[in-house]
Image (cartoon, rainbow, N blue to C red):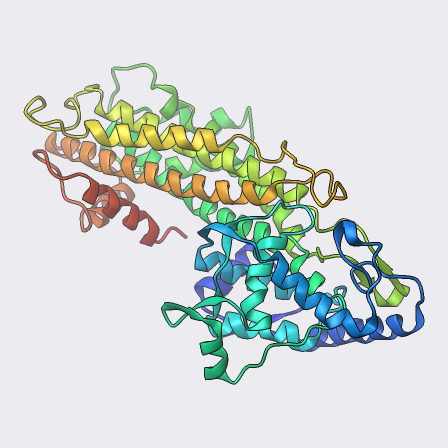
Length: 499
């Protein structure tokens, strides 16, 4: 299947998910091609007629904006920009995020406000379609004058034919790929280097990935909550619709409805309860899970605006006969919501760990640490330690990046967003929460099996969930090597269908 990049069609998170999971091929629509060419033609004419310097087109960059560049040196200026800015360090960006960067950069250019050559945009699409994925590093961007550093590392192999890529399952010099495919480095025209490096595609690609992950984790959190609630012999009344209608936050209503649906038909949930209340990690789960849902929804709305925008600089407006140097590359909108998203995802992990603790605490007929002979066996004691450790790390990662700034470029860029740091730490929090939830699943399935020994059944949904899980992880009767079970639990969550 083909996804046509079209400036007249809004790109949504759901559509990105379809493109990625459906392994679609990208192509430029006729409208996108026309707009890109129109803008490039206009900029070429503008350079011939305008005598006043145009930032980034006929001048240097950043604090060097007052230095004019001769016509003969404009191509070298753009090439120099890409090479000098490729300063990425640290861990490599995951390849699925790199692929999103290629997609979103092409989307950015399709509106025809950047001045890129058509062949330049097509090369990005070719790299996406052929899985030629540049090696990009996580550290180096201030998220202010665009994601200069990681985008330079992206464009160095893709456009200039320099540096390393992943191709056919291995890392190699991009020159090998160029030779195989008959590609040539693209000679950049005026403004193109700046158009390639300015922009928020590093932050926004991480944001898209994190939202897709968060949406999945949010639904899985409701599933595991339902499983843990039944395994804990919890009460269903805190999930009644009539209760939540008096405080009708959308996410709260959705969570309560999910739990009612997932536990429908359970013998355990329907039986008489001696206890009057459950701990907050169960009773207040609609409020916590629901707040996370509402946060994810809000963050997605901001990110969708971002990925349907032109975020490089200067902005070329052919119909208005203007080239305007502004600040659309500034990552503050993304920095703030990525900080917010990390908090929401971390809270799903925090409440999950608390439910895990309740299950191992020898309450409501469950044995200590969920083994039949505690003492000789430590059982599920230390998986909770692991969850607590991960949750603590996530809390530390939730210190907001967007409140920090370090001035740069001889103080021309005097307030930066640090949105790139917000993006990479949000990614880590999402991975952490998945691991914590995997431990809850590990414990809750074990606890439910003790209910089975009492002759009780949960709902058809939960029984099927646990039956599927038991294909990955067996009941633990005596002490075993636990990390393998936890890793298998993570894999189960990653591969299970949740739609």
